[in-house]
Amino acid sequence: MKHFLNSPIEWDEDCWRGDFDFWSRGELVIQTVEEQHIPPTENQKNAWVRFEDNRKTIFQNLLDSVFVYYRKMRPRYVAAGEEWAKGMPEIQSAEKLKEMIRLHTIYISPDDEKEEILIGLLFSCDWDSEHGLGIVVRGLKIENVGGADCAFML
Image 1 (cartoon, rainbow, N blue to C red):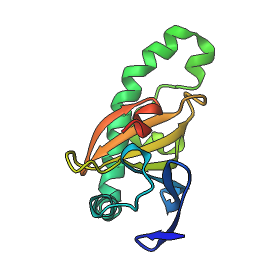
Image 2: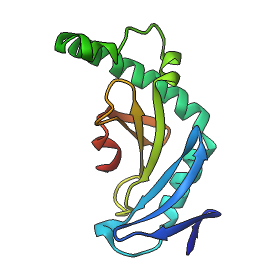
Image 3: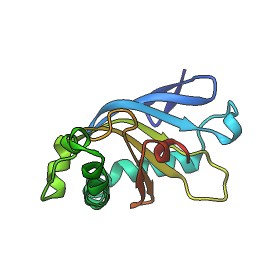
Image 4: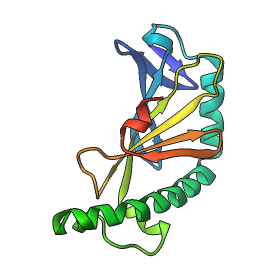
């Protein structure tokens, strides 16, 4: 068993897996280049430390970005019918999203030494129980909000 910044991680066929415990409890997935069985890099460790150190700011930015995404997507759900619209009620503020999303997996992108390390966040959400919500964080900025796949297709 290896450790990633004091947290135990284990190799699982194509990535490293461990746990996290902030905002909620869940799984931490550390991806490697071409799924090679190599240890996490210093760049990945530094990206995780930056993420952890700034998680309050990132979480507020995340809520604001998801609120914009939610307001853009809601008309599509309403147009799809009453059953779809029930899962996506009209909300007036980003704060309401705290009750509607639940973080369960964090992905750290592979280190190809060419690009900045990305952090992918996978949430379950009230409006899409099948696909969930994915968010990509680059540095301290929210780079992408979309379906679950954007969280792990880094």
